[in-house]
Length: 496
Image (cartoon, rainbow, N blue to C red; front, top):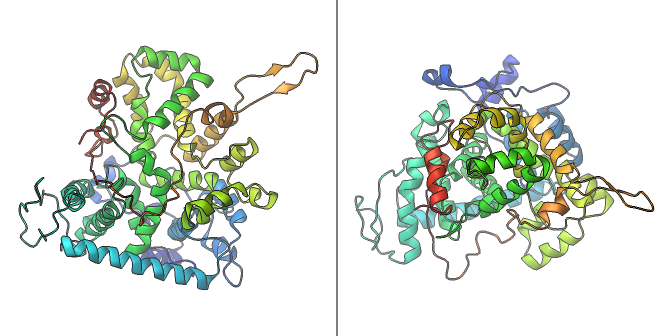
């Protein structure tokens, strides 16, 4: 079935009134209206993917013309009334070549799986699924319950203890998530977000929960009414991002993308890179938050959603569903067969560029080029005004409400295509150009699509929970320069 995204009541109001004010979809709390920047994104007739065009993109039995949908998204985003349904496809929850019946069966199967996981978690912590959430520690390091006697203390294995210890951190982050939105005035909605994050932390015990996941999950909770559907949408988004959240005693996953960003700026804007290095910012830790939560703090809520769907449409690979659903051996085989002309047309712009340059892996680095485009847009201010990292952070914090998501994406694609050098080879004057896919991504890895289903835990893994210092809770528009300095001092360690 199509059109199963959330916001049903609001959609009905929209149909009656014909209103196009995004405030109808994402209402702001009255006490926050004055301090909340207005979104720049507006649904545009003829460019934005509308509900009518979305429904028309399906055949009689339910096959989706994904090529047509991607073109429309890349032109003008997705109308809020159908975002949830569209996201399920661009994130790889469903195969565009599937039928209505096949998707109904898969959706039901996933909902049942989620119910089983939830029951497993409820058996240990009955608060899950109760409409409430936990914001205080409930268990000690040695497995002794702290407050709630209803906690099942018979689960004393290290994985269970570490998971229970993470629950109050999830709760603390949930109550600070998207606080300006009226949606989260309801404790029931907060609890829904908490439940999903808690269950994800239990299932993906390799990564568990890390601060910032709440910002990724929140839009799914708002857009998709069914909790299980929201969970699976979040799980697919995390397939792209989970390696960024992987932390050890000596490193954090996002460092790889920060290194790539450094190489990109060093190549396209050596002067800016040198200036940042002189400010002790050559590791680009000031961009940590942008990459971790995909610009959620740098754009308004509506604009960040618009940016995400532009990114996902541009990164779309027609094999994404099979890569997530099949065993590793089969998914590797299918990845090799991506590049026929028909499937190439179904790739997003960014993915198509990678394919044409011979990049065969499933790396997803558009976010790196988005940060690069933001830095380029602020080039003059940074060079002129930045005397320290505090100034860089302040300049970047000023983009909230002042940057156009579509322009940022267009500029990112230009940087991605930009040749490193134009050389005439002696003798035949052949024009040589090679873009960043082969220059940089070939030598520096970035976060990859995770192909291992999260319900297959790795043997011997121990669940850990970290709170990353530069995400800036409570949600302020300026990252803490003190945190950046601390991260330099700690060699960018993740801090428990």
